[in-house]
Structure formats: structure tokens, C-alpha cells
Image (cartoon, rainbow, N blue to C red; front, side):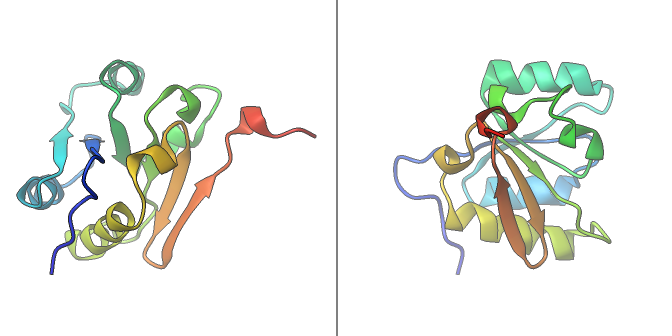
Length: 130
């Protein structure tokens, strides 16, 4: 059984250039607003698009862990997926499991690390007091 987002929650997702088209198709088939970015888009341009469109990025690219260059706090959220191998068989259940357990507002401005075993929502580095 496929669970859908709760009423009123709107997942606007953007897969980076390394995202399988089958992952995007799965998300669309299950009523998520999901698009893939063009392969020619550079990370900085992708980040600007995330901010402008208020989309949540899901990516395998470690570059987006750099909060100095790509602060999740300026976005609707970043989901980093270090699942290996990054096959559809491994990524789709993990991503779907995340999307049905939380709402977009839970990760707004945050970095999420998604593994096969589950996920962690990282605190905003700007909100941590030493």
C-alpha cells in the first residue's frame, strides 16, 4: 500500500542530475510534485533554483553537505542520500519511507541524512550555541 502525504502537506521535490528517472517516475505516480534538474545545471545554479522555487532537494552529491556553500537554512530542505549502491531498489523505499513519516515543514531549512536504516534531521548550524 502506498501512503500519500497528509492533506495540506505539499512535497515539492527536486532530484539532482544523479537521480534515476525511475525514482522521479515513482514519486509522480504516487502524487508527489517531483522533477529532475537538467544535467547541465551546475550546483550553484541548482541551489539558486531550490531557493527560488522552494523545492526540497534530494541528492547523492556530498557537495550539498557544505553548509557554507549550500546552507540548508535558505531552502525548503536538503535530503542527502548516501545509500550504496544507489540503485532504485535501495533508494525508492528509503525515500518513500521518509516522505510518509514526516511533513515538508519538519525539514524546512534543514539537512536530512537518509540511509537504508532510517534518517536523521541535522540541526541548523546557525541555531547551535557553543
